[in-house]
Length: 166
Image (cartoon, rainbow, N blue to C red; front, side, top):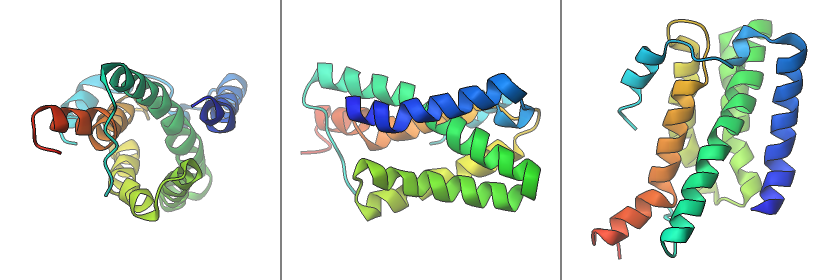
């Protein structure tokens, strides 16, 4: 995880932080938006990687909670939001979603798993663009955390605990 933080997360934080500190663009989505609408819409939400124990479960869930807002700031806020302002929504959504989906290949994910991220990436991109009010990463970050925890560590761990997964 240390290499992942240095190679992927720290550069994303740096780029997004620089853009925010220099220009403070509203399209970046740094702000709460309309929280009530976003919370109402977060109620919905292969390979399974089951954590070895509760400590591993906590570590994975914590990592996803840190990773999701960073990825969303980069791909939805910076790429999608910025390109939407410059070139229109189609370009912003296409570039933000394609880069988000392909980015997961850097983590060594199998192509089927990479393509599965599109099942979340496309609706999240549309939600970021279509939700009423000013752009906000809050709701889509909650969806991201929920989907990741359901697909990766905590979800499979729970399924194994209740006997639904061997």
